[in-house]
Image (tube, rainbow, N blue to C red; front, top):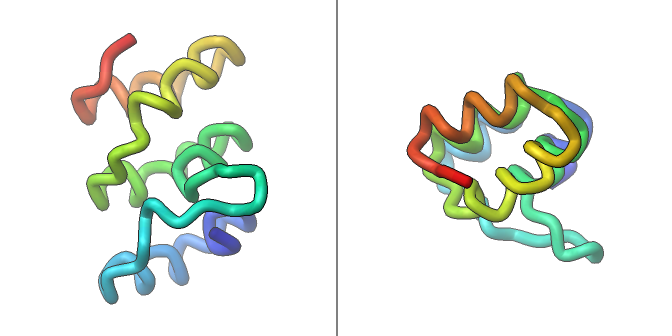
Length: 82
């Protein structure tokens, strides 16, 4: 979670390679992908999407609402739709 919060791409990739829990949630019930989407950080979201995070559908609606077009395109390319 902290790696996505701070956009630490190296740490994120290391955690993903070691089987990091993509469905872990913080006290606000956000997953790492949801957090990266909320920050409008495509660089942080990309490895999470690549890691098959299953929260793409949940993350898509707020990205659309907030106008985060790059994130929306990333999620749609991964197969999630509105």
